[in-house]
Amino acid sequence: MTAILSLRGVTKQYASGHKALGSVDLDVEEGEIFALLGPNGAGKTTLISIICGIVRASGGTVHVGGHDIVRDYRQTRATIGLVPQELSTDQFERVIDTVRFSRGLFGKPRDDAYIEKVLRDLTLWDKRHSKLQELSGGMKRRVMIAKALAHEPRLLFLDEPTAGVDVELRRDMWALVRQLRDNGATIILTTHYIEEAEDMADRVGVITGGELILVEDKARLMKKLGKKTLRITLNEPMSAVPAALSDWRVTLESEGAELEYVFDSQAERTGISALLGQLSALGIGYKDLNTKESSLEDIFVDLVHKPATRSEQAA
Ligand code: ATP
Image (cartoon, rainbow, N blue to C red; front, side):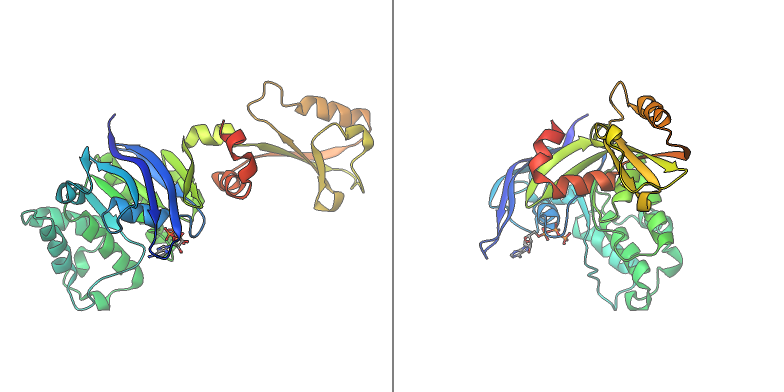
C-alpha cells in the first residue's frame, strides 16, 4: 500500500500566538478509514484545514497523492473532498445546481450520471430541485457530503459529520462511508462519538494539545491498552475488602454487593481461577460473574487524561 497522505513536522501557530499544532508526522494509506480523535480544541480542525489548504501551516510539509500541497495546490486540492463541521451553503440555490457547481469548481467536466448516483446514494434525488432553505438540517448535511463528493475525490475528510444528526442519518452516513471506502476512497474522519470510530476505523490517531500522541491500528490498540474487568456479584454484601484479598486488584462496588477485579487480558494467567479459589477458601459465596472489556472510549479517556502514563502505555 502507498501513502495517500504524508505529513512531516507540521506545526501551526496562529497569529494570536496560540500554538495549535506541535510537530505532527503522519502517513495515511490509500483505502483506509482513519479516525482522528481528540478533545475539544486539540487541533483536529486545524490539521484538516492545513491539509485542505484552508489554513497555512507554520512549518513542515504535507504531501497528498505524492504532491506537495503548497507547490501543487490545484492537483492536491482536486484529490481532496472536505465535509466541514459548519454547514455553509447558499440557501437560495437548488440542490442539484450546488452539487454540479462544486464539481465544476475543480475543472471536472459535467457528468450528470455521476451526480445522479451521488444524489441517489444520499437519498437526495427526490429533493434535487428543492432550494437548500427548504431542507431539514440533516438533509443539508447530506448536501454538504454530496458537494464534497461531486469531483470524485480520492481522499475524503469528514469533520464531525454526525454531530447533531439523528440516529437514522448517522447510520446512513456510515453505510455510505463504508461504500466509498469499498470503491477505493480513503476516509479521514473526526468524531466525538468514539463508538463510531470503534465501529468504523481501521486506524486511530489520538491528538491532544496539538500533539499526535498515538497512531495505531484499532484492533491492536484495543488489544494492547484494553483491560478486562470481572464483576463478582456476592451472595452477601461486604463492608470492606477482606485482608486476605489485599494482594489482588479487587475493589468493592455497588455498595458492597459486588467485587470488581481488573486483569490483563493479554497475560498468560488472568488470575481468575485463583481468585475464585481464594473466595471459596474464605467462605465468600457469589451468585453471578460478568466480564467486561474496555471500549475505545475507555482507552481514549485514559490516554487523554493521564498524560504521564502515555508513553508507557503506548510502548
Ligand atoms: P473541536 O473538537 O472543538 O472542533 P479541534 O480539535 O478541531 O476542536 P481546533 O479547532 O483545531 O481544535 O483548535 C485548536 C486550537 O487552536 C484551539 O485552542 C483553538 O482555540 C485555536 N484556534 C483555532 N482556530 C484559531 C484561529 N483562527 N486563531 C487563533 N486560534 C485558533
